[in-house]
Image (cartoon, rainbow, N blue to C red; front, top):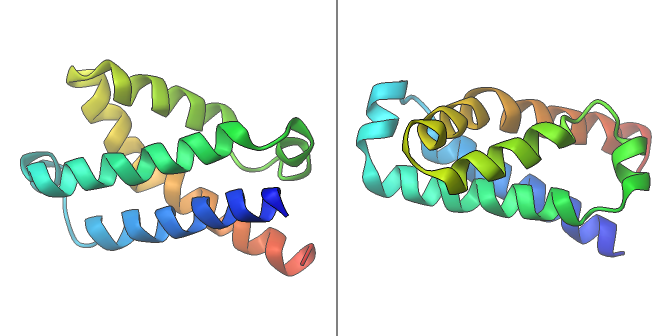
Length: 110
């Protein structure tokens, strides 16, 4: 039950990230303090939930880049250029890929 809740947090926050950043290019995203701050908050929720999943879930859902989530969390907390790069990577690559794999797994492992 806890695993399902954590996966739901990841999915809900991921949808929020995609909604917040839809149609924005990198410069627009980085220039928008409010959007960037809320996106960072949602990405932290995703990375915290990912970190709290047991290793068995990471193994079962092997295509999700769990190490990437750990790295993004560290870089977001670092601030500066590392934070900006991590945010944009997570927005354009990591979050969409994670959502896609969660949907694939939901269909194959309900």
